Image (tube, helix red, strand yellow):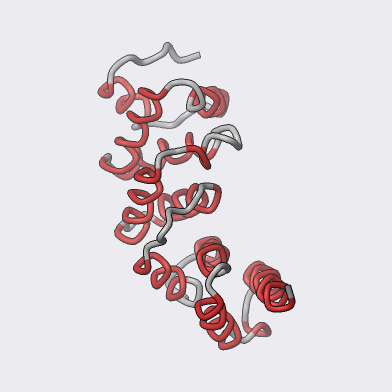
Length: 184
């Protein structure tokens, strides 16, 4: 087991290489009760180089289920900004996963919604990123009927027969969610 790091530079050194899975799980649990550790990882994730940022985001994905929804809104806002500006598809996927598990800020960022709407249909992104963009677009739109209608129109443009099974499944679930909201 790796000895606990105490300074940001020690954490950066640890996060710059391969991480043992047991350490990732242990650090994910630590996020719940160690605010300084959480802030350090957040800083590394948003300001560090790609490998360190990816590893820090990976640790966050192993946080207890109640940790992400209780994080300060500036965490999620920073992650949204980073998603839209990173070149790393791994970091983008991890950050979108974290955002989808978090409480979204109110009012939500329209630039992030636009990003999700464009990202869900962009062939330049991996299927996992496109699926997460679809889910997040629905999560952002579901309390706004006019935005929900726009999302539905965007999803209808995406021919289900031409989508890979993963995206077809997410599209189907989002369309079902939209239909149930209109009935309810």
